[in-house]
Amino acid sequence: MKFSIAIAFAVLAGFVTEPANAAGFQPVDITIVLSPRAAATLSKRKEAIIVSASYSGDPEKSAEKHADEIGRIDLGTEEHSMPGTGGTVRLTGPKTDEQKFGWIKGPVLINVNVYSARKSSQDNLLNCDFIDGPLPQVAKAPVTLNCSLIAENKSTRALP
Image 1 (cartoon, one colour):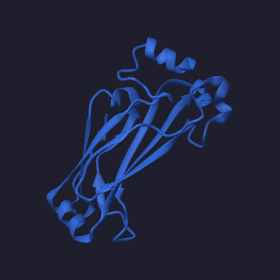
Image 2 (tube, one colour; image 1 turned 90 degrees about the horizontal axis):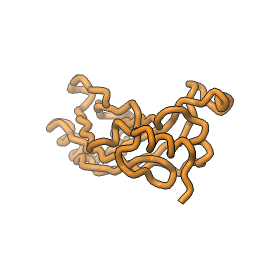
Image 3 (cartoon, one colour; image 1 turned 180 degrees about the vertical axis):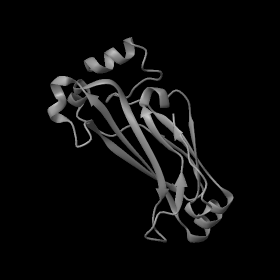
Image 4 (cartoon, helix red, strand yellow; image 1 turned 45 degrees about the vertical axis):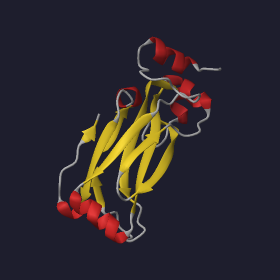
């Protein structure tokens, strides 16, 4: 099995807490928990939930020319649809050109957002906790993200 230098360094430096897949992404289990009002509204509207994850990394000096508009190496996105009741989804990482792992310094970064699927409305109905940080830190344990209706005006948490 072929591993990039960045992945080997991450393993040796202790960044990897679970086995990475062939592309260097560690799996993350995310449980979506809805407030009672959000669960009732999504059920009534037959609405679904989308879990969207973006992966990136800070560029090595020699790879800065490959950075995107926010100065990071884009490693791709993955999106999962789940029933409007909430539940658990496993993120495993997108298909990515393995060469990009050699362009990053430090760990892979992950940003996860959750929103309604917009089947019953043009607008997102949910206000959810989100993830924004180093993938190895997020992948250490299952993560719970709480969601309420935007109209409930509840605060959210940024994890890890």
